[in-house]
Image 1: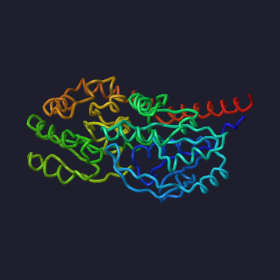
Image 2: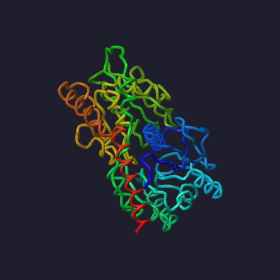
Image 3: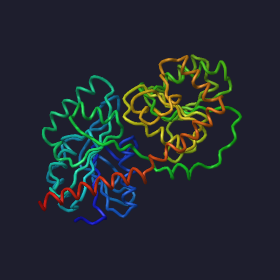
Image 4: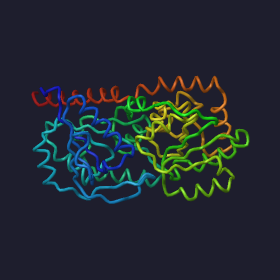
Length: 384
């Protein structure tokens, strides 16, 4: 029987130098297990960092930039099989935790080289953003061949993601949501300067599918009834020049400010300052980590686009979901969630309780159970 303290390898085809959704999840879960006394390693794509929170990072491949599922990704070129075998032989992992869908050329090679006593766990992260993404997923399944049978357990980050995993890859999976470290957001929620105006905050990449254009159009309409409201647009992206021109054309320049890139340290305070944190993503979301961050930071109300991933987080409260393309209804919802005191207080109270289930202490414990069960099953099968 394996020791309670495990050697865990997180396998991720992309870079850990970024802090996008999946990389963020790898770092948060890896840090949690390291703090729990487990030994953690990161087997990832082209990455500059050599350590994360004191644990070794193996950069296994060179990566190239591509567009997939309405995202900019880097995918690995074929990783060196000999080096993979050497690392696996030296580390002797109890668990390999693979982020899915994965590349046959890096993570796939790690999976195939893994020792028979190593439990292989997967987490499925995506929803398709269009027909091309669906086609790409079916092609990827063909490349996998029979390798999906190597997995001892697979989780999906939401019910919609689990449905797609089944439809596109034939994968049966348990829903285990994405996670955040709530304490990191609460402890940074320092005293804020008093505001004499209502403040809407947008924090997401400035790309078409994230819906910032639709938010600006609705916000300009809102200014007719709430002319002193401010909109802060944080982060960056290729759409920024067009959005700045749109703000000017709509006569909202005095009320809209583009902040550019916001660091992880600045994020909680910015979100905490929001009377309304708005994330009007149109499609392609499998979950909604930024929704959790806004709730944990103390934003008064968190509003999201009514896509399947965001609905998996906010669906219990229909007022917190909006069709971003219906500009008039969007503006009316903004006004309601900025002015109706009883509604605001009720939603804020719900958010504070709802977000607790996504804390890394809870989600991490679920994965710990998955790891130990998978290892126990391997031990049982070996002795039968």
